[in-house]
Length: 72
Image 1 (cartoon, rainbow, N blue to C red):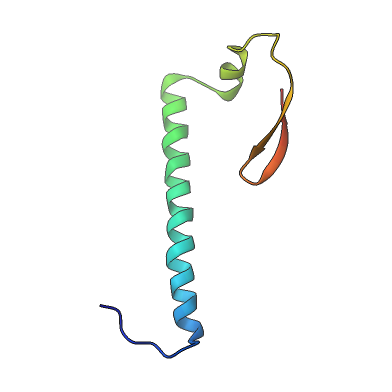
Image 2: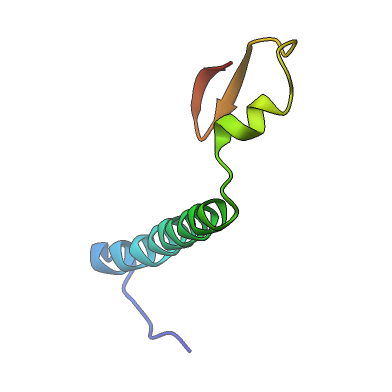
């Protein structure tokens, strides 16, 4: 059970934010390392995956992690 905290305690709010955002950032970093290790193990790269689509693939706008970018 969590201890009772006074209303508006800034340190409690900071601790909760660190737990929530820290866990999301840690999960993302671990997922990125796992993906990088798998891609290195199998010799795959993003360019290799895009080449599988062929030369007729059109350029498109994609939204990735909060940013718009052109995908060739």
